[in-house]
Image 1 (cartoon, rainbow, N blue to C red):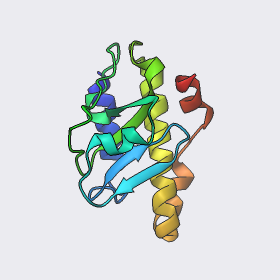
Image 2: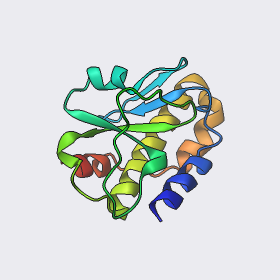
Image 3: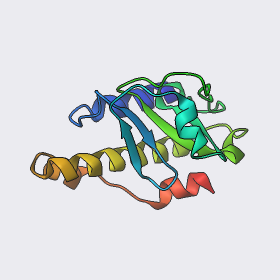
Length: 138
């Protein structure tokens, strides 16, 4: 069920140009994009109290799967930096939705700054609530 929700999110965001980059959503909602392949350790080095989790491996009711530090991150994937304190807590549907909303907001904001006119209608239809991701993190 969790995989379905995250896959639907990714398909919903197809109009956003993230297919040619590695996308990392930080705890504060910042989107970091890399146009060249990088290993997970690059993101983890700068965020030592976090682990990296792929949106492709999120399942409701299961623990978040950590991306191995030596793993090369994939283009067109969305990764989340999650506090280590959350590594032993099963993911709820509410938390998954919160992460999806946060990623959508970051991607829309990123795209809006480069092609503002294309995303205006999409951004207007996007309901985001910044406290949802923060609620998951705390």
